[in-house]
Length: 141
Image (cartoon, rainbow, N blue to C red; front, side):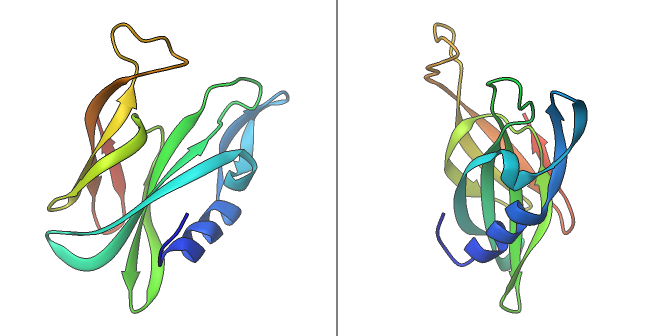
């Protein structure tokens, strides 16, 4: 993970509690306990010149299984300080790439299971969208 928002993203991962499942049942965990990696992209929305960072964070909701989940957290830089403005849980499309920053939205290509793929080695791809407002991020399939 690199770039201007690295410290803010690290603080977010270390201090944010998310729902999780353990052998004792559903509870909450610190994101840092289940996070695996973060891919970060920088840009600006066409309707807002403030720099933003999008962190796609892999994590494991169910610590008893082997499935990974992904969330997208959007950070905005205002006055030299990066702040999380919203998070979309359970986004689809691993290995996010080819981001496009539009007016109030960010679209990206992600890897998905294709028609002849097995789950362990997906090779398909699809486009997805994050709708970004001042205080929220919503994933759109």
